[in-house]
Image (cartoon, rainbow, N blue to C red):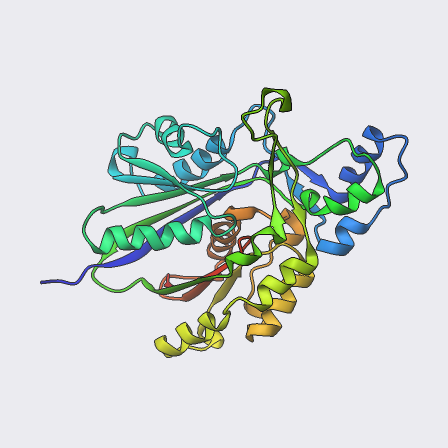
Length: 339
């Protein structure tokens, strides 16, 4: 009996045409808050973000996912009916119910099963893990993972003061994007291995909370609050997370970081990225940097990085790629792929 493996057959990314520089964002904040003397420069200084992409006013996360999904299918000469499972893996859904995957499937014209998978910035990486399990066990043959992130919709434009501005500054580092991955069965290993870990006691290090989620009608409608980061709590969670999973997986596969054509790493700030690379020993020239020109793309980050590396010729068929996820929760993961 032939052993079934999973291969990553393709990747596509969609970055909206409209962009906003960090300087332009600060100008807009100043216009919306004329009575406040908001300090300039802290967004770029703290994150390295120079600009980000903005979805069109009428677009939803599903639209961004569909843009990437359609492109990916077209690149491979496939039709929506050729896909037998769609997973929407992202932080920003179109709505609470139904699953955004159904909206993506309907817009694509697909008639296959569909569901959402959500685990902060590790949503896509976990979707790869799930798709691999479903493919190697014969439950599905061609899985389309779609992601649409519209985190800029959560940016607060009116502020109570400088203290609040500093507290929610991380909310201004995000950008919008769509991405898609196509996974298929193969006779030779393409997805060589993956490992995951979590330190869930540190869940409150970075949060996007729902206010007024209560049965008390006096509390009013639930409101999504902006991203807030407790730097001390987050740093402590990272320190207490078993990051040896990266070294252990590479050792099991007989690999070193030098064997990879590219390493895609979740990016919330440029300084944090280089600190993480130093900590786990990844050479900086292996990294695909997206945080500066695109911002924090949330769960779309890794597939966007892979798509850009492939488009630039940096990654070719047969090359090794590492996908490394770091997400609030706190969770971490790695997938090693032979492209």
